[in-house]
Image 1: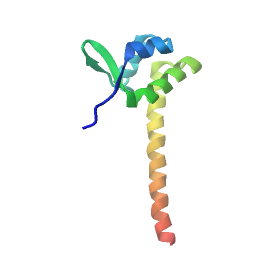
Image 2: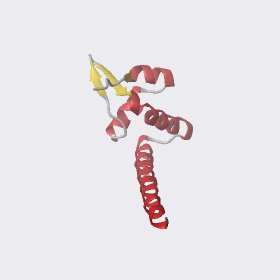
Image 3: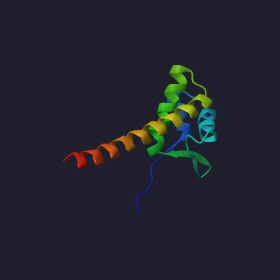
Amino acid sequence: MEKATYIFIEEFCNHHNIEVSLVHRLVEFEILTIEKKEEKEMIRISELPKLEKMVRLHQELEINPEGLQAIHHLLIQVTNLQDEVKLLRRKLHRFEN
């Protein structure tokens, strides 16, 4: 079993100069999941790109957490549609040959 690697939320927030409350709001809107260990909150390293993307959108475009939730939902839909298109192209390619 692979051991999960984590980053402490407090460290991330200090590094990116954001409030911990923003991360809590992202959890509240089901964009991220937090885990606790020894009274410290942390996220999986695998979720770091998603968190960084949401922080950039929040800081650079001043998008509020509600807007981030909508964007996150739309990004998931786009990814699912892209996967479906790839699958359909492979099936079509098989019939063309």
